[in-house]
View 1 (cartoon, rainbow, N blue to C red):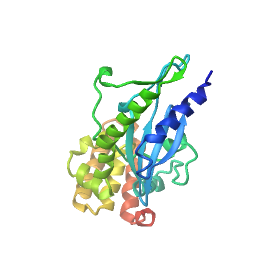
View 2 (cartoon, one colour):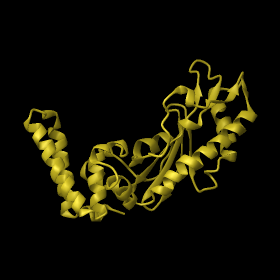
View 3 (cartoon, rainbow, N blue to C red):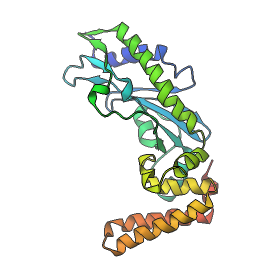
Length: 254
């Protein structure tokens, strides 16, 4: 009988044999059942392209185990943006080597979530390939699953990475394209602080001045009207603006 850990190791080994990401220079961090995630990532001087995946299974006996291409998630992490934010508001983040998938997910911050991946509105839109069933690997289904993953990644994830190669792309294709009220749909964690940092890095001075003036006034007025829960947020906003205007960010940016 195949023990639980061996099931996932064997499935992952077969997936790695034919997944195109390895040929494209992505590194792999093995699947961890504790968080039901494995990671592929590609690193450049100032950017991580990251793809994570998981498996579907019954918690009772791990049979069957399925692969769903729509469950693949991706994001880009721009080191300069994350390092500047961490210099202002430290959060124990690091950009060194990663020992496992969980460390990568925890410490490699998501700057921009994949905005090009199709939205799933119903469970009926998901595909579930049974790669382990009745105590055995289903090799034909694994081959089919990897083929589907390759096609899906090529269409929806690699295209996303290619569309956001630089921080300037974030400025031009998100901040300049969409109203500020929609930015939080794209940027993960402290979206408006990240937007301010991106505008400063891209010398988008007009947009930066207009937004920071409006946003600072908006938060301040909300506090005056009883939103005391925003006090810490407002203090952090001021810290971000003062840090950027001091020019210290240039020492941190890559």
